[in-house]
Amino acid sequence: MAAEMPRLREGALDVAHFLADAPSAGDGAEVLFSGTVRNLHEGRAVTAIRYHAHAALAEQRLREIETEGAAKFNVTLRVAHAVGLLHVGDSSVVVLARSGHRGETFEAARWAIDTIKCAVPVWKEEHYADGSVVFQDGVPIETIA
Amino acid sequence: MQIYIEPYGPARHWLGQNSVTLSMGDGLCVADAARLLAERYPEFAEQAQRCAFALADGIVPASQNLHDGARLALIPPVSGG
Image (cartoon, rainbow over all chains, first blue to last red; front, side):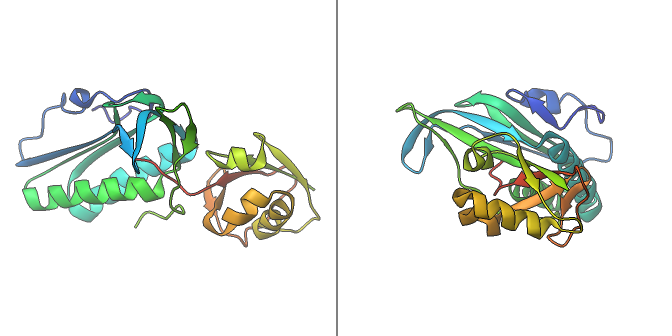
């Protein structure tokens, strides 16, 4: 994944794209997490989700997560989040962590996705099978820590 | 002075529009803007304690002073991932 690519992208994410760049020679571990649109939320059938964002702030926060995560866990970290209309099975968020060993790589990936969910200004608007469209309730935005 | 509130995500439904103009006295801060907004929009009032505000440089504290023409993004609870 080229470093200059935007972290906030229109449409479903291409997971394979993130693995296109080969790991460095010192990388002994690689963890890729992809969050996908599922067909059920709290018992209701979901057909699609439209992701909304504060684009400038979301981009800034996603880049901060990469920088903070790299320093915190001594890993290489790449993250991206989708905006726009996604359907069931589409990838909405990707985290790719690489480092010398599995422990910190798993930890970094977990930290990154958990932080994305509470610190990046993105909102899910769910489309249900009955035709209704509802914003999912969220959590108050947090700082990156 | 005039402050422009730009709601995001579900906050657009709470305010019923993409931008709200608030007329405020000089020297007021983000908390004052939030209070005025809550007086006008009951749906926002219910969620106000769970919301944040941002200027161009990022999230700002409630004590942040505002200047005439400021564009204040209303950031409701987030639900990415």
